[in-house]
Every structure is written in C-alpha cells, then in structure tokens.
Image 1: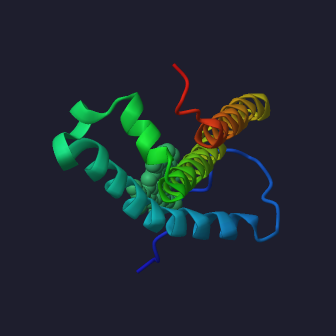
Image 2 (image 1 turned 30 degrees about the vertical axis):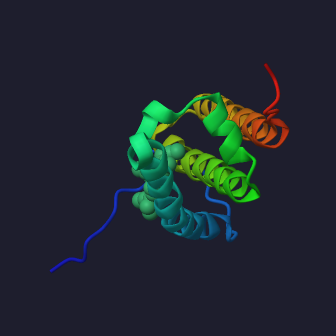
Length: 133
Ligand code: HEM
C-alpha cells in the first residue's frame, strides 16, 4: 500500500531554506487561537449585548476608546487579523499564481493594502478625538 502524497505546489518557485515558513505556520495557529477570543468577544459585545448594533454611535465608540483596555483589544485584533489574513493570502498566491510577474504584482498589492490598513487603523485608535464635533 502506498503512503498518501501531496501534489507539488503549482508554482515553480524555489523554496528558501530557513525557518520563515515554519514560523509562519506556527503564527497562523497561535494567532487563530487568540483571534477566536478577540473576534467572538467583539461580535458578542458589539452585536448582542445591551441592544447590539442599535446602540453603536459616536458616543459609544468614544466611551469604549476612553479605556486603554479596549484600545489594546482593538489594536491586537487589528494587527493579528491583518497579519493572519495577509499571511493566509500570501500562501494562496504562492500556491496558485504560477507566473513570477503575477505573483509579484499580487503580493505587492497585498502587502501595500495590509501596511496601509494597519497604519491607518493604529492611527485611528490612538489619535481618536472624542471632543470633535
Ligand atoms: C476567528 C479565528 C480564526 C481562526 C481560528 C483561524 C485559523 C486559521 C488557521 C489554523 C489557518 C491555517 C490553515 C492552513 O494552513 O491550512 C488559517 C488560514 C487562513 N485564515 Fe484564518 N483564522 C481565524 C480568523 C481569520 C480572519 C479574521 C481572517 C481574515 C482577516 C482569516 C484569514 C485566513 C486566510 C486567508 C487563511 C489562508 C487559507 C488557506 O491557506 O487556504 N482568518 N486560519
């Protein structure tokens, strides 16, 4: 009986021999575990507790972000979700984009969008002005 095998990746890219892919694999599992708590907690608080989405307005956000605890919660959720999602898409691009140019373009777009979202989101969390009218 032959042992089960996996198809080789469709791209012809040479694999770099370091620990990056192993660390990325670990990161997906660890960030996934933390994200379950952060995302389900977020969903519960924002959508179910005390009237859910109907009570969300500027004052509600201002009240939440007055607390360093919720700032940190949202910051960690933002960073982990973005890095987890981006690394997952990086794997998909590596698996499916067989042309070097296509791969570079898609990863360029992915990394730019990820960087921009993380920087803008982080800025919003820390520079949010509750007194603006
Ligand atoms: C809620 C908790 C989450 C858990 C437990 C989780 C878990 C995982 C795990 C273990 C993998 C690796 C799968 C593999 O290597 O075959 C993965 C892949 C992935 N995750 Fe998540 N994830 C979560 C949230 C998210 C979020 C919020 C996003 C988007 C921002 C996301 C996007 C992705 C993508 C794009 C992949 C790659 C899929 C693939 O390789 O086919 N995940 N996730």
